[in-house]
Amino acid sequence: MPSTATTGPGPDPGSKPVPDTIGSRERLRWFTTLWVLAAAFHYTDSQPRSILPVLVIGLPVLLLPTSTPALAVFVAGAVVMSATALPTPANHTVLNLMVAVAFATAGVYALATRSRSGPARPFGERWIEVARTPVGLTLLVVYAFTVLHKLNTGFFDTAESCVGTLLAQLTGLNGLGWGRPDPGIVQLSAVGTVLLEAALVVLIAVPRWRRWGLLLGVGFHAMLALASFYDFATMVFALYLLLIPARVFAALGPRSVILRRVALAAFAVHVVLSFSVSVAGTTVSPYGLTWHTLQVLTWYVAVLPVMALLVWTALVDRTGGDGWPGWPLRPAVLLLVPALALVNGAAPYLGFKTVASYSMFSNLHTEPGYANHLLPPLNALHLVGYQGETVTLTRVEMPQLELDVARRGVPGAKLPVRWARWIVEKPPVTVPWLELRRVAQLWREAGIPGIRVEYLRGGVPKVAVDATTDPELAAPMPWWQRNLLAFRAVDSGQGRDVCRW
Image (cartoon, rainbow, N blue to C red):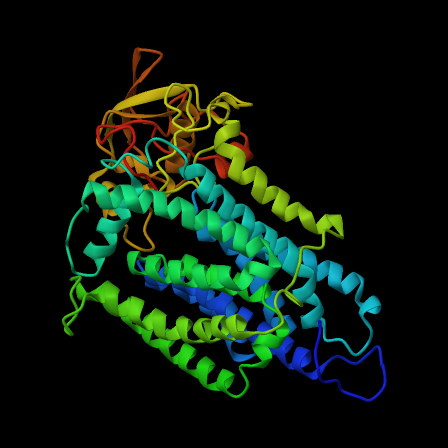
């Protein structure tokens, strides 16, 4: 990377420019901090007690943000925690898993090739540089598929578009209660969302334009945070840091210490608020604002000051695209994670699954007879027929206690809704046959007996008095089908194109 200052008068190959050395250390400090905060923010919105395992593996990183052993422990923990959420994790959990695997792979490679970087080069700096390309490409893949998935008739339908649902969610959570916005606003927002996300892909991909991508991305995700997506925003911000030159971080100077203290203090307040919400029994706080709004405000204080300063510093940087990291494609083994991210994003079109493929809140349908993508070839690309064989559930009788738990989303309890959100949709509910079998086996493993299921398969009425022991529904499945594949409802009493997670 270019710089104007060096550590010595001679061309010592083991020395590095001072701004780059300081900046690399600051980048590592802020990246690890934001990554831990992102993992914690996933639970503060609705499951505050589940934040404790994150703090156990993340606290060493918060205390020693440039410690590579602490980061290694967190990477291992992130892989385990994200993998256990399969097959129905949120988008940012999928991204977290991909990033953790990429860092684990990059760490092994950096150790194996440490002699090539010279004895004076810190391992953490080398680790970040090796992980940058696979992690950055994975982020681009996720962004690209969020655009591609939205190119369907449902997303641009003003009555059903997830844009309208999310705008209503944003206002409702913050005590405004405006309901679903005017169709004109929904239409404009749907088009604007697709154009904005497409612009993000291009701006982040091109080093010379990346500073503008940072500006657009930080503003976009800061707005979405009001709709409860501050966990995804924090994860994305952490990844942005890997794509910024070290000299930008060097410009933080002494302000970095103050900013980090503010960030950690705001994070602590945020965690306290999340526990307060869980015991308050109301959405409105004693301070006049909703609890959710207070949580978002503390998130703003924790994350936005450093991101705003980095974006400003990048915008006023006079070196153009010089020194902004590109996309080296070697060693090829490190490209396995972006390739996996690509396959995962394409899974709905290949017929494998419709959940955890970056398609939530997109109104996308890829099932035969229901497919709604605006590019016809993608509607007929199926390699397997899992989505084509469907059943229609007309009645599901669960033990009342478990059904109440499922609807409330009580933390720490057995949560059928966590495995399949179609459980609480209004019948009749149409789902792939494989999905019904998968969920029935999860019920059995969770010890929830006596679930009666009435359904139509091939037009023939069927009744499973106890789905957990039924010969057809409870027939053994390969582990990869049970743990990697999941499907949304194809149709239900709430409508075919209704916005689904």
